[in-house]
Image 1 (cartoon, helix red, strand yellow):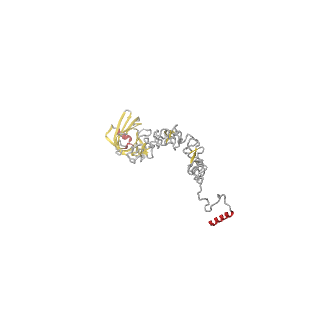
Image 2 (image 1 turned 120 degrees about the vertical axis):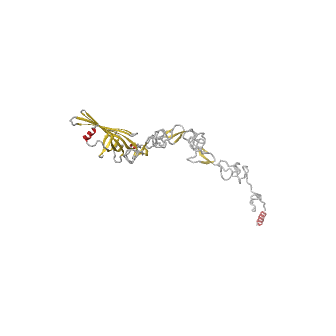
Image 3 (image 1 turned 60 degrees about the vertical axis):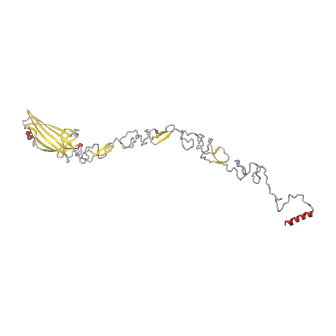
Length: 423
């Protein structure tokens, strides 16, 4: 077909009889580019890159081989501007060269430094230029000057102790620099910092509290009390309690040797032995006569008769001693006058009262279920058990001749009490 087209054209030309003057605008259908040569692109900026690769052939600094720089231009013709050059910028309000580590307004990202920003974030107080990571020492000001998370770590510290009750002794430790904190003290060891009467400097008193903070209560200040089961006022030594006051059923002494018998108590005397004498004298006119009746006595602690307020009660056998008794005939007269027998054995229950009516000791005698004063001048040596007693009674009357007489009757006795083996 091309051949026929060309023949037609040449025929047309021949028919016209003319030859074309300019054939540049002609297009070779088989080679529209003409001549078969490759298209050539210009390099107007002479940077070694033609315009088909150079994205700005008017600027030799812009081409695929150029380094990307921060200028908002695609320097290396990769379709991006300033790629890989962005920096995170932190506000530096106090202009100390350190950015805010936690900015409220956030951060800026750019390859160019924005005004008032910096590329680090170590400042923990961006309103104070004296606080930042570049500070050499963290001073004593209760502030983290160097932003390392610790406060005053470079300062010289002292130790004090919280003293809530202001008694001069504290509890928990307080580290401080500078002025001593309020309500603190240099002394520790307070075991109750809400009570100013409790601290290591206090003496221990008997109040069931550890007053001196030595982890003991009432040490050295209690009284030892002894169990008193029979409630006779005397306790036993093998059952004790240490307390500030007497617990119920306890007393302050341990002198009872039988705490199931209220009749046996102080020093545990449990037997009686001795002598008694009854002396009688009568003076009537010019006549004087005398009579002395002597007895031996023995007995044991009474188990049947209780004398309230008495320390001992003894059932005593009184045996007449004919050999030691003296009689100038007056004893017979005494018998005739008062009736009864001047000699003979008797049985009584005696009791010793340490403090009788007026506070003095006395010997009482039991008669028909009651107790009566028997001897009112009494002396007892409680260590040896030696007991002496005396009673004198002076009576007046009229003799056979109508004259007045006086008689003096003296009862006296000596006894030795023996200690119980169960003391």
